[in-house]
Image (cartoon, rainbow, N blue to C red; front, top):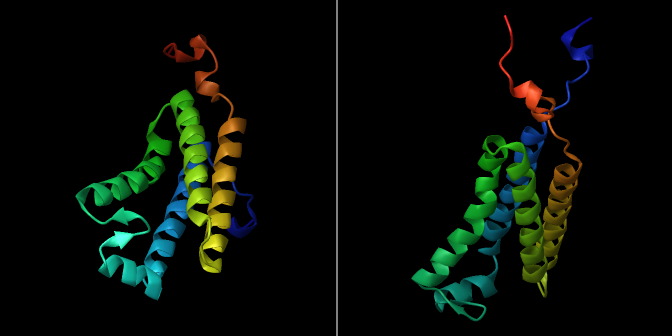
Length: 149
């Protein structure tokens, strides 16, 4: 039997969650970058405003904080213990989904398409976090006892 015909081992939920967050944040980044091709966005930026917000230090700090939380989820998925991991994924994904829906209102087609894909990825995160069961090593207090030699 060759390596090509061997079945793939299932990926740990932490790795799958990190991959989903990575894809989500790449789309967020690219959509924001592509926005600079829009003349209306460039005009707003040159005028020092985006929508109703003045582009100042507070605005920039808020934008960075907004993207740092889901970006850190890529790392937190691999580091947080099981229960904290599940809860954090559920809370952050649901809050981020609401902000994506709100930001998509009145946007162009490319933005709506990307937002739909982001929402699909976030739905996958929520589904995976909900279906994620307690790892066997954390299932019982006896499993935490040192192994006898």
